[in-house]
Length: 344
Image (cartoon, rainbow, N blue to C red):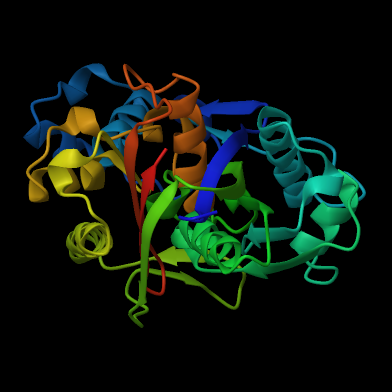
């Protein structure tokens, strides 16, 4: 194969069955400050006097994040783990779309920091659950960059010639590590998984970029087991700058210019960050695939879910088809930043 690269031949996703609107979430969240939310909304011209506390909470969440609902896992815990079950559903769908069976897989990359079990690791459990043996695999944790980093690892393995078909799965059940007495984080995070099957081909992934930048002013998983978000506006600016930097650095490694890209699939952090990224890159917001309104922020699986839905034609007017040129970009706690250019 003259120009050997890795092509995405199938994607899948899984959102838990339980859909939680902002109004329903209000009953789960403690320490909400109505007066502070009222002041913020009033500055935006919203008639807060006509809203009860639940309506106020709903409007506040939408104004701060753009989220109207999210999916949270609430099913009986299966024997192999809740995170593992959601990952399995996404993996099976991707494999079915790709037309590959367990025997075709050479390697599994699993991205997560919320598995039920540390050992056996998530890749090992997934290999068992999809029914394959004598397959390699490992788990990575780069938070919100997990899926893109997983694709990057698969890309280099396939380019090496030692692997032909690789399954990449990103999954987070953030409801397991969300402190619902902290409204600033409780309103953002959600559960879900996304997966992709990659196979050796002459077109597909064009370039990949990743970078680490140590900082604890963004998101930290504390000893108590809860995620903490810090930094406020500083974090938003840094997130926008990081995703823009990763995107341009990735393009520099490709034959493409920004104007050659059909769709950008960013990490679904919140609506304001996506809008700010579009402005910084001087692009119309219509070029950005967004699922934040209905799916919330699912960390490392957010790009995977958005990509899968865009391929299915479930993201507004977007329709990713063969020949579409894509740019994926992300930033995660750590900080981690990654981007990938794809000739889909």
